[in-house]
Length: 273
Image (cartoon, rainbow, N blue to C red):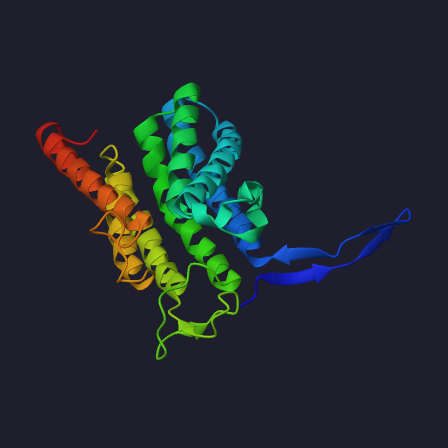
């Protein structure tokens, strides 16, 4: 599609030639996704979390950007590591290319778990209410995903199986066949999840971990279903699944359902937290 949005240069500076410099669509969308999600969470941290900590709105707002730094680094590392493990044959004989992030190849679940790990450590260290902070943050995870999928579509990655009727040709594939644009399917699904979770959050914030559990359940189902159109059905991963991401989705669905049952059972007895 459009892996490079724009190119600039080359430039000449003090006798040196610099460039050309490329603006990659995937990197641009990733930066927009992270920047917008971080800003919206920082704003909400000042509104929701600052009163609980007894600090000024501005302090919570600024601290959120400190959190973002660690989450971004851990997310990128986790996403690349998950991709490398799932597609290790790509790097055999040239392992250094694992660090070539500009070539694409990030798995969302790896980024999610890497960022979550960094976020938990930060919340505990700064003594922010862990469950409440995670629930405030949750809708913006879906928003960031949605924008990131635009980058996937423009970059020509994360496409689906061959379908001559409903598919599109992705030049980066190189086979000349039409593939389903599953990136756009997930884009729509992620936007629906974002607006739904953002709307219900005003009610679910009363119950610790409920917003996050709802996200885990709904996104797990969305990704589990879409994986059937992203992978070859004739192949199997761990016998019953078509990909590692589908295995993780199934685990996420089960864990989230158990969490929701526990939350509803607990809070029906003692009332909202």
